[in-house]
Each structure stands twice: as C-alpha cells, then as structure tokens.
Image (cartoon, rainbow, N blue to C red):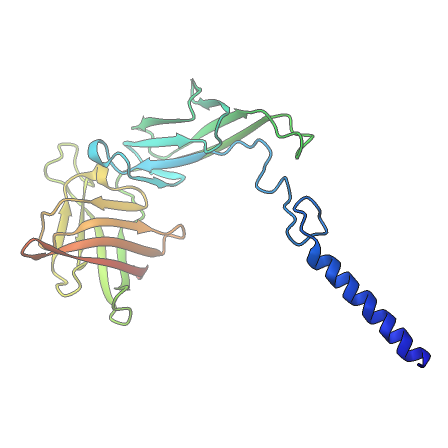
Length: 263
C-alpha cells in the first residue's frame, strides 16, 4: 500500500470522525453543538419605552387606538410602557404619574410640541448584563395639530384585494358639521368606497371619530353604508381601508382597499 493512499485514508478517517462528533453533539449549553441555546437570547437591559397612541373616540370606541407622534387637538392620548413588572415614573407637564398606562385629554394645545419623560426601574438581569443598573430614562414628544388638519384627508387610487387590477379613486374630505356649534371640521365626507358610484357620499357627524392617521365609522347610515376603518401609512402616502358595505337583505360585502395618494 503506497504512502499517498495511506495519507488519504487517514485524512478520511479524521473527517468522518469529526463529522460523527458533531452529529452526536446534543448539549444545548455547549456553544459547539448545533442545538446550543444562548441563555441570554430574548433577554434585554432595562429600557424605558414610550408608546403614544391617539384614541379614536370615547365610549364604545374606546379600544381603538392609533400609534402616532401627531395628535388632533381635542382628543384623548394614551401613554403606555410595554415593559412589565417595573416601577414607572412619568413626567408630563407638572404631573408625575406612576402607572404603566394612562390617558390624558388634550384640548387647546394646537401648534404645540408636548414632551413626556419616563423613568423605568426594574431588577436587572445581571447574569446577562452585569453593567445594567436597572434604571433607564427616555424623553420624547408629540405634536398637537388643529382638528382641521388631519393628514388622512385626500384622494387615493387603488383597488380591492379581490380585484387588484380594477383600480378606482376614493376621497376623504373634511366637511363642515352643521350640528356643531363650534364650527367646522367635525365631520368627514368619504366617497366612492363602493367603487361603482363615484357620487355616493358617506358623512360622519362626529369629529372625534377621526384620528390624525385614521377614520373610524361603525354606523350604517349613508348611501354606501360604509362600516369600518381607514388607516394611513407612516409615510402618509398609502391608505388601507378595511370595511363592509350593506348589500341588502341583511347581508354585507367585506372589502379591503389599498391605494396611494394622488392628491
């Protein structure tokens, strides 16, 4: 047997042996094993996180919130920290709040930036983060705009999910609310969400149903009987509508409209 063949045979045995060792490695605490699980995976340092959301409306709409850093004047705003089992210290104006979540009503603040600070204290995970002192502070702000300036107003072109090649225009336009003694911009006209009737109009008489980036209507009173939600994307250029239209005999047709701003 020649030497080159012996060398090849020896190397082959080494490779097979190493491969077999790896295949037999079944220890989740061993970094060299394929099923190793990092004990710090999913863990994090104590971090202050602020979630700001605008409430769509009071009463039976109270669970509808839209995350945003811009809110319409005269609306409830929810402040929340998703970090569980911690001590919370919020500083909002002259107030100090210690709840994980709370709401405040802002009226008469149009044109202002409002700052909010959160201090989170929690037992740190020193095994994974030995330098964590268990305290973190974050300050952020949100802007309050006049109720006549919702960014969802405009004309959008798109289509229903079930008919993606059959595009059409829809419009969302602020309108005077003649039932409101304060004046205008408490209502919205939304048109052509039924696709086949560009003159059809759906009117909301309640401005508190409109967020800076969303419009809510769960009534069934209008030509189109629009019932659902309109959501504007972060870039303010794309609209998603999830709604249903009354088609008679107690039946409704569900639709999802996706479109882009053309005006």
